[in-house]
Image (cartoon, rainbow, N blue to C red; front, top):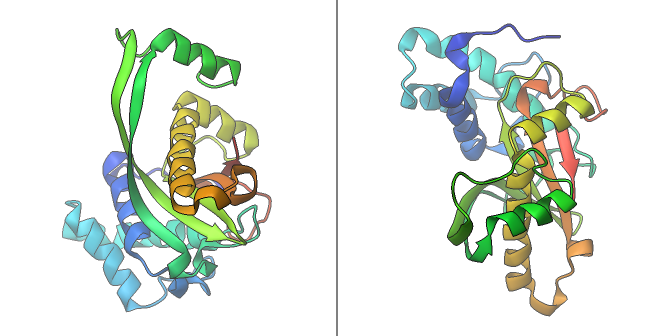
Length: 235
């Protein structure tokens, strides 16, 4: 079923609202949410309306925005993930939203970096980073969500992209087109370094890191378990 396009709730501003709600909502309250139901309680509905207002949406658009966001949030938090859990069921103490990271970049030749990435099937269409011949400095970023399930750490990234479809091939094409595969690799490296620092000698990447989940929220359907809208893999 194709969601009708509403230009009011598209683009970066709407994406920011979606991320804001997912960062601040109480996951556990959504655990019993069913498709077609309203927000689970006045607090969650009020939060969604407040984040829409904070993003500059006028009063006459708030109710429509809430009606659109409730199913997006509900499906995102209750869709079955490949590791056998729903985000709504991950206890608060086992997840962290919006982790900021920084790590130093050793002075690196762009052609050498791209050659390495190409050998691993990443950024096949890219031949440079602007006019730069070298990259160095500080890599910084924000990870939407990290969580621990069954002894393994995961990274989740929420996407509000509208795609022609949300099957595996279409998600792979979207990942490559927007270079989210490089983003996912950077997140993996940040998480790998953090876990190595926190867990020390006891850390083992193959055992302890579960992978990355890109959640294309407009394509998620909590009533299905075929992975539609979920791009999950591990480097």
